[in-house]
Image (cartoon, rainbow, N blue to C red):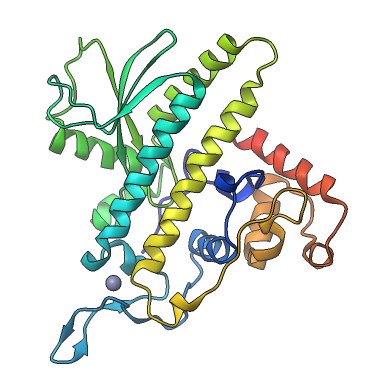
Length: 312
Ligand SMILES: [Zn+2]
């Protein structure tokens, strides 16, 4: 199945420096997610769904090599729900970190559906967020795939419009004294452009309020990084959620702090390093040296930060 091209902030998790737990991946997560991003097989040959429905003793659910099955297997829906809930919690926590008052699951009688997070703060109008993580395979026609291929945001914008029409009766009235913002991101990590605009404005407001010592790029980088990594770690749980038993036996270990070699250099498949070098103007892959406990991390850190500046 063709995939939508990478969209807004879709590459952030690939280059975020693992300076804290929430910005860090297990090796197994990183390796699987990088393969998924590149469209490389997660499980050559595929296998029987780990939660496979059985009829007459024979399993009928097949986990394809690319893991697309995990996004549409009804027995795996618990992992989609957990991904949504983790993202909702992370969004509320980051809003509070920026200085907003944020609450989850607040009913507003002016909205048909209960939004996920309500935020109030600075000079920004009251804002409701709906967290939504759609996957292209669940909304497919050939014409749609063709359209999504032309514009990096076409899929997430179309999916959100559909969600608005279905759950929010088209959205709030034009003169509503509040905003309904799509905290909508495709399962490939591309955020809705409207969310990105709102978030940039919120970070700007928070930085201005915090005074001259605040780093606006730093606030943006950490908050977007935490959202991106939260999504990806939960997407790993989706991919692993109904994987065949042998694939579930992967072992990982906690990501290392920045004083050690970042996962990027240890766990990424070669193709991801090549892609990253071309996409982000990163320094040449140093995998061999990194394995020996390289001390020249300055170069890779600079590359990460340069990539951050390019991407954000
Ligand atoms: Zn399954």
